[in-house]
Image 1 (cartoon, rainbow, N blue to C red):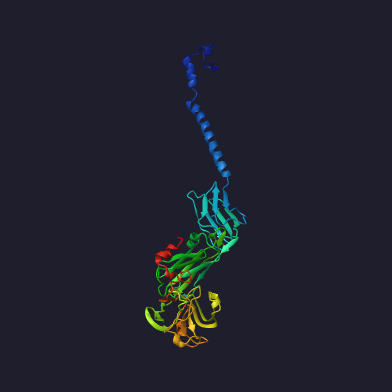
Image 2: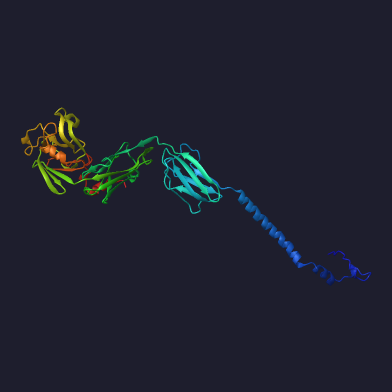
Length: 415
């Protein structure tokens, strides 16, 4: 190894490097501070780490949080059958709000990493929504989209009417404007609750009719609430519900009337106590009256009855039948009768299937049984017919589901 010459004025003249000993050379080398050598190595490593850290920090600072909204901003016919999603990269979400044009807020939740928000329900159809996504330590991101409107819809027409008062036999009956193929989805979107509380179960009579009732008649004074959450529920392929509302009904006093066509009498009970007994005339041997539990579904002070409408040709056409109350869809009524002899009532069954009470033309005579029974009745009252010589009425023929056992009723539920 070559060592440069280092002059030393204190050396004796004529002595040079050639005379240095190996120990002297090592001593000279040892004179270089060790710290200086170590410091030189450490400074290089630290500078490299610092440079990398600085570059990483700069890159991170240079990256900007990116928010993605699904459906995308500006979409005009967004899918209303899928949830809304908001995601962020290179950041976290502090909060997300999705507001409909009517002021309603679409609920949702953030994931554990706070990088994704998903609505817990789907947006409504035909509605404009504004999304506001607040990113932590960054600006708020906004977006707007409008959902599509369904091309085919259905509604459910319900009985009884909102805010009405009915008798203890009145079921909640819903008739749909389109055939329902997904019965479970539709039934899950409908609730019927009672105060005082009682189990209420739905029963499908057809693909367009769903009735609700408890195991036994409603208690007098019950408040019933029907909740319809059918909007955007797909009842059939491509056919969606439109209703989202709550309606209430009330149950009045309990009145149950029993028609015994062997005895040809009607016994009226109010709250378990007999209030009246009337002589009646039921269906004759060729036109027997349905037996079973029936519910008054319509009431008319006067109405026209024409035999052709019930498949009996031109046997009768009476324009002003007084005090008529419908018991079946097929045409069974309990009504006043002014054209038959008074002696018929209580002694002979002569009708075409209806239950008749003595009455007078014009429906204004308050002294006759036809008027009195009509005056004491309301929609939803129960009329039980026995000893008629006819089979039990079909539960779907009118509001007459009480003729099904509780087990059979529950078997008709889709949920």
